[in-house]
Image (cartoon, rainbow, N blue to C red; front, side):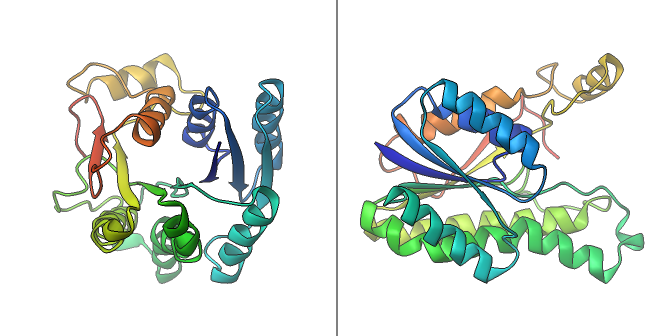
Length: 241
């Protein structure tokens, strides 16, 4: 039975990932930062499916809290086999109007959280020959002017570099590190007009559904090739940012 730690588990993608994984025997350590009610709803759903889970609230931009999250997860379940770093809010703002505080928040939330959890989980993942799954965005590898979301894109470009670097460094230990790169995802309660506006930008004709990200994550953990590591896996309907 695998133990899987999901950061940002109460986001729409985090919920979809947790539900997609719940078809297999596993234990879930579920991190959240805010909106405890939404995290509680996910745990209640998992309880109905008899999936063991624990909720952990912390701010992963703080290395000490990231260290505590790993320690608490190990105390609760005894091991960590897979680390899924989903935390990473998208911020849309003109780079010419972004303040130093907003820039730091973008980098901290989208890049530093990923590094912090990975750093403290690394020894355990080496021991278990585990997996790390990060999240970036479709087109992250093609650096260009992203003037309306520069902080987010700079951070996620860093996540892509971190993913590939860790994959190479941890490959001798048989730890696999990959990143899922979603396109436009249908999250929250969007109107039919908003959905159509999104769809008009996507060659496939519709946004990505969160459950498709969940299915991709499950495939990566249980059915992907054993030597698949260092990959940026796009789920975007041929759309790139």
